[in-house]
Amino acid sequence: HIPYRENKNLTGTARYASVNTHLGIEQSRRDDLEAVGYVLMYFNRGSLPWQGLKANSKKEKYEKIMEKKMSTPIEVLCKHFPSEFVTYLNYCRSLRFEDRPDYAYLRRLLKDLFFREGYQYDFVFDWTILNYQGQNAKREDDQAGDAAGA
Image (cartoon, rainbow, N blue to C red; front, side, top):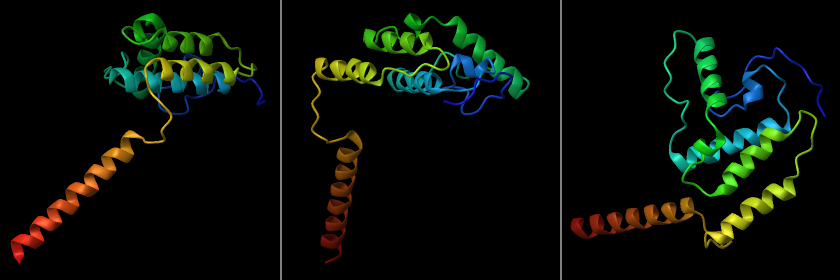
C-alpha cells in the first residue's frame, strides 16, 4: 500500500473526487471507490449538487465544491434512488486510508440491486443496441438512396 501523506494537490476531476482528496490527503483505494460512487450518482441524477458553482479561481472553486460535498448528506445525494447507493457511499467514507475494501461485499450489494430491479446478465449493453440501431438506420438510408438513384 502507498504511504500516507497530507498537503497533496487535488488530482483528478474535482466533481468526482473524494472528500479526503479535497482535504489534501493522499488518495487510496477508498477514494477510488468514493469517486465511483459519485460517478454512479451522476449517471442516476444527471448532475451533482456541487456542479456549476461559480468562483474567481480554481482554488476557490475546489473549496466550494469540497464545502458543498461535505455539507450534502449522502441520504440527500441519493434521495429517490435505491438505498444501496447510500450504503455504498457510507461504506466508502467509513474506510480508513490503509483499509482494504471488501470488494466482494460491494459487488454483492450492487449485484443484488441489479437482479432485484429485474435486470439479467445477457451481455447486451445499451451502447450495443444503439450502435446496432444506428447501423440499421444508415443501411436503410443507403438503400433508399440507391433506390432513388436507380
